[in-house]
Image (cartoon, rainbow, N blue to C red):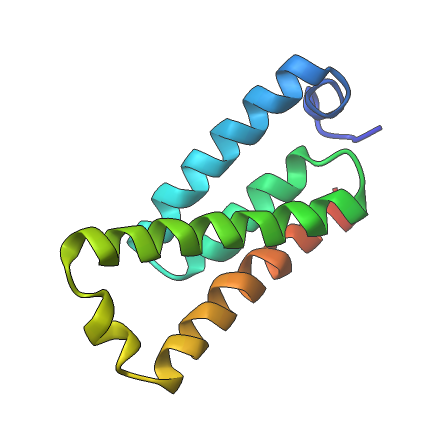
Length: 112
């Protein structure tokens, strides 16, 4: 049980847990669209909702995958995916940051 009021209920009750996870994901996507540190913050939000530390890490990785899917879809609909992919190794740096930063943020679950 967490020392933060309401967080235990958010983790234990299934309906509230899923609503919290969706809200955390949407808020994290919004933050990530503003700055790359939003990836860490989004991972932390998803990690705080998780029922265990292991699930927090998996949730952070899942959040990173969602962010990358949203990013690739915006590039596709913007018609610039080919140009971005042509940058080569820079794309792999973006993918690595997109996957690792949320997992780092989700480590907050080990504290709270």
